[in-house]
Amino acid sequence: MPDIAVTLAQPGERRARPASDSDLPFGKIFTDHVFSMKYAAGKGWHDAAIRPYAALALDPASTILHYGQGVFEGMKAFCGADKDLYLYRPESHIRRLNVSAQRLCIPPLDPDFVLKAIQTLVMLDKDWMPETVGTALYIRPFIMGVDNYIGVKAASEYLFNVLLCPVGAYYREGFGPTKILVTEDYARAALGGTGACKVIGNYAASLLAAEMAHSKGYSQVLWLDSATKKMVEEVGMMNVFFHINDRLVTPRLNGSILPGITRDSILTLAREKGLAVDERDLSIEEVIRSIENGSLKECFGSGTAAVVSPVSTLGWRDRDYTIGSGRAFPLAEQFFKDITDLQYGRTTDTHGWVRRIGNKRDA
Ligand SMILES: *Cc1c(COP(=O)(O)O)cnc(C)c1O
Image 1 (tube, rainbow, N blue to C red):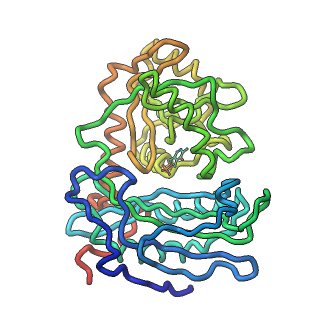
Image 2: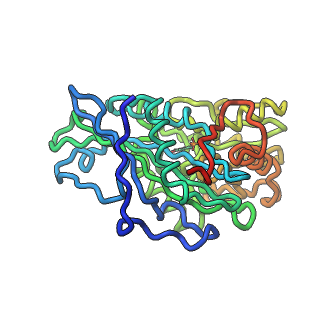
């Protein structure tokens, strides 16, 4: 494995620390250092380095700025009891980063080296790791094509970076149930497209639908399949689960759904609990019918940022449908507890999901 050249931030380059852990905004505060590595055709990935956080210099003709040849990941590190530090399922996130990269003709990274790079960066900036309940260090790896060339083709040069972001507790005042609007006007992803990968353009393409939902008083959209607008796919930037007739149902990974690692954790834990689980096609009409006949007890999204996000109300074709009482989410709460207990090292990990990388007090 190549060495990582480390240049420490000088006192004048250090970034303002948040005053407390208690109200860290998501995604706005970054730590002192960034990992970066370059790729050039014929040379491969090279120049692995950790440097003080600084603006990037990009040529205005850089391909990423014009055609969006870029992918990313989102994962977290946690500070547990006795200040032990953990990564949650980093190997799965790194594997998915390479799957996303392959979809956009970006050369693969060595997964073991990326893991080493992330561990080294987190340990270097470990003083930034918040400690209070529910907080974490969000890790954002991303890769972009950086040829200085205005033409649609795979770049021959790439930049890989990793940023760290201390983030506050997602739920500070208990679970916030959300109102979700089913959209039949827009689609997030189509079969054969890039929906199953964390490709940057997917997110720009989703903004308008989310804004329309906000303007009508909903917090996100429920996405249906692009071809028929009948089948449920995802909710916002999360996978979606339904508790129907004592079965846990989630859309199967059909090629346009992002294979969430939280989704996978929930499915694994549910099966271990003996809960009947179905990964299958699920129509919006079935969802609405099961709300009306009372067989749908719970609906929630799943993703790294929130772990789970309960849905209280679905808006569909100018009507609002409240799920159960709209206030009780026992299953979502159970999965939230199970997963966060693992993430903070509070329960024994029998799955090989939790990687201890050191202690906050380490020299
Ligand atoms: C990242 C993401 C998810 C959730 O994936 P996790 O691995 O659980 O964080 C779901 N849907 C979309 C569109 C995403 O980008």
